[in-house]
Length: 221
Image 1 (cartoon, rainbow, N blue to C red):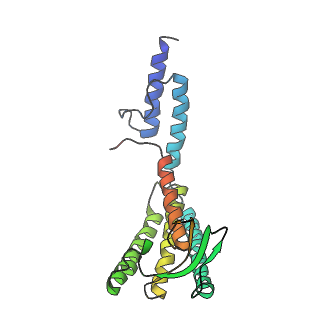
Image 2: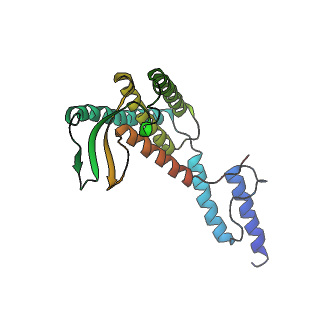
Image 3: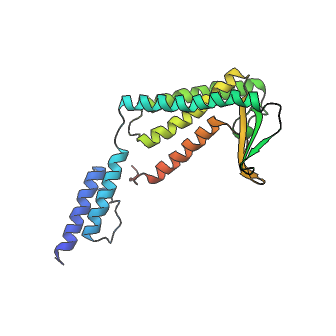
């Protein structure tokens, strides 16, 4: 076994490279110095993760997920904003949970954290309605046509799309302004004022980062 061990080890590594990358000549993604048994276990894990990230989504799955997340995300956003107008506009700040949550009405003509609010009205309209509308359309097309998306990454991008659509509709209906009504924090450390659409975008982007970190490493071509 002492002499056969290195040969078995190299054969396992060669087969693993062929399974994962279909390129036996590429450098192996498995760390060197592993025993044949550990190599086989690591190979099985990497292969299963690689298969997960290379499995496409059926069109029906895409449509159901996209429509479902859009309905929930955009629906919740558009339902809460009229409530904020009715119950918070013109009133003092409401605090709950020991001041962890604050509810106050604000109309933001800019983007996240009021970026771009100093632009002229025509510039904001072109950027936040025209430009954002084109981006959201391109993202929707990408989600329906891109291959190799996992359910996780698709859902994360769909949340970003839902949040973007929610705020974009606000700009169309409120002369370029977005309704915000809550912030979170402890003492002086607080977020900016945001809404459900912003929350969808934030959760989607965080989910995307986690999904990228979990993805198997692949050689650069």
